Structure formats: C-alpha cells, structure tokens
Amino acid sequence: MLEPENLYEVDSDVPDLTGAVLLHHFDGFMDAGSAGAALVEQLLTAYDNRVIARFDVDGLLDYRARRPAMTFVQDHWEDYQTPELVVRLLHDRVGTPFLLMTGPEPDFRWETFVQAVRQLVERWGVRLTIGVHGIPMGIPHTRPLGLTAHATRPELVAEHQPLFSRVQVPGNVAGLLELRLGESGHDAIGFAAHVPHYLVQSTYPAAALVLLDAVSRATGLVLPPGGLEESSRRADAEIARQVSESAQVAEVVAALEQQYDAFTSAKQEDNLLLDPDNIPSADELGAELERFLAEQQGKTD
Image 1 (cartoon, rainbow, N blue to C red):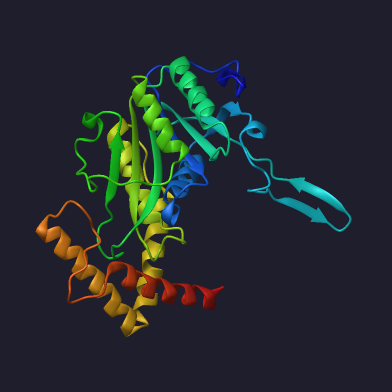
Image 2 (cartoon, rainbow, N blue to C red):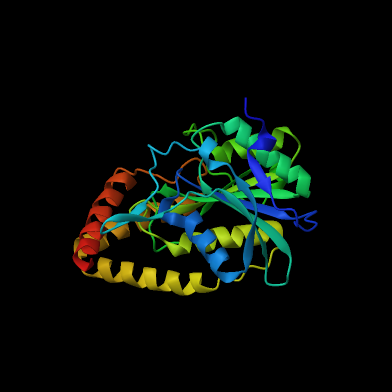
C-alpha cells in the first residue's frame, strides 16, 4: 500500500509557514461558471509564486479517462502537457504568505491523498484550509450572486446564512478533504459561488469575485480583485447585449427576477428554486435562456 508521505515531494527551502492559509481548487468536479478556476487564474497572474510541493500524479490519475493533450508537428511529437497537482507559495498585497493547491482531482487513492494533504497542513502549521468552486442555481444574472458556505466548525461561517437543510451530492475530493480535516481537529471551509444555471458553461468572472471576497473576509488576506472586475464588467455587458436583442429572452429574465425577488422578500431558507403557479419553473426558464445564449455564442465564434 502506498503511504501518504510517499505521495508527494517537498522543496528543501520552504520557509516557516506557521499560521498560513491553504486555498485549493481541483479540476474535474463541479465548477459552474469556472468560478474557482477564474479565481485561481487571477491569483497566479497577480502574484509571484513558486511550487513548494508536488504530488505523484502517476499514482492518482486515470490517464485514459482524462487524456493529457499532446502536440504533433508534421512528422514528430513535439509536446506533452504533463498533468500537475502542486502546492504553490504566494504572498498577498502586504506580503502575507499563503498557499494554493491546484491540479486535477485525483481519480484514485482519495483517502491516501487526503492523509497526505493533512500531513502537509500539520508540517507547515496551516491554520485554515479553504476550497472554492461554483455551483449552478436558478437565479438571474441581474441580481446579486449568493454563496453557499460550509465548514468544520459553525463559527467559521457564522456570517453566512445556510441555504440547504440536507442534500446528498456526488462525492468529491475537496469535500472529503474538508470532512477529514475536521475529524482530525483542523479548521477548513468550503465556498461555492451561486452561478445562474444558463451561464454554467461560460466563464463568469462575477462568481470568481464572490469567492475572492469570501476568501478575503475569512482569512484577512489582502487580495485586490485586479483584472477580475474589468472581466466581470465586460461579461455582464455582453450578456445584457444578448438579452436585449430578444424580447422573449427578456421576459425569461424578468420571470427569473420575479422568482428571485419573491424568495428574497419571503426570506425562505430551504431553496431558491421557487415554482409559483403563475410562472414557469426556474429550470424551464433557465434552459430556454441557456439555448438562446448558446446560439448567440455560436454566431460570434
């Protein structure tokens, strides 16, 4: 059996990280609107970083299920995009160190991988681990985006109102990591930005901004939005343009707004997907709008 400590390699010159925060986002599980991926891209673009730990992807990935890209040029293979599951060291705007773990979600040895991450958490003295991603919701893009927060201790997410009482979802490494860290006495949080379900296949920077704000509040890290704000403005303008070109789609958005406003005013806490008798369901409305936006995107490609 592969031992957790044999699953990774750590650089020899890692500085003292006692009290640092570890952020993580894995490719492969749900990430509506590429919310988590966009946040990762923003952090890696805005701050100098270096890899301080690497995981053995050969022992974790099913290559035939997720084949890495290779480049063929005329008569030879030129390049192979080696998958990487790594931990990087970054510093925020005021120089505070934090860690970012990214890469493909492991296909195998979930428990061993989680134990390996816990070893690194304890080795470096990490005080808080946070996972980020996006989830689809029946909400309009014209209203403020919400956030689902969960943690190993209620106090860690006390400022966030619970949305679900109980729900069963497909297993994922990020969720298992949070669960196991809590069982071993470590603090961990998960943030899931709510993304209009007709935008889940697009990169939606507004959702990444929601995650960035939540991470900043929870950790005290100074992480300015940088290019995310401009990207969000451009995306919103393009969506508004597409919607304005169709009276039918504008009616769909208005109906979603009605549902959202009814939920907000009634202060219901168990589900956003209201289904009043006088308007179609959020799923029906979202599907119609999603088809329209996909058609518009096809015209511009």
